[in-house]
Image 1: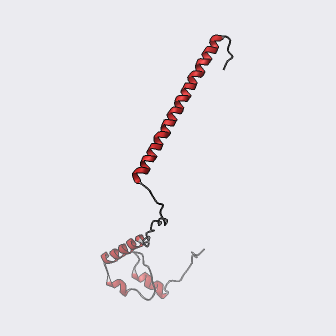
Image 2: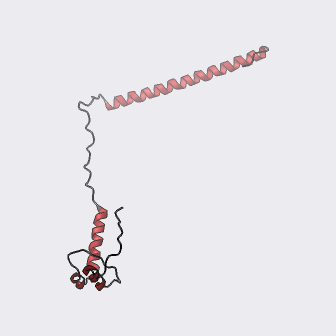
Length: 133
């Protein structure tokens, strides 16, 4: 605040202080009324429910449901797809007759005679590729 220079400034200061005091008193009155209303609500609630006793045993925690076992759904889908493909594919009994004790693969377009000549050793191995490292 700036210093008062004459009596009019003091009168204005007195009026401002009086207004501030009235506002503080009004705020205090409203706070007390709100407290009284809250106390009336608590009293009304206590009267309406009557006397209460605390629980003797603590409440039980909620039951934990057992989680279901995980299912390998993708593997099941793969198995079904393989089964459907094996059943749906054209089956040729002659392919079983062309096999022996070893597993082998013949790319389409490579004749049976090529595989037979390789097994009999007609062609010699000229180079090897080590795929392990």
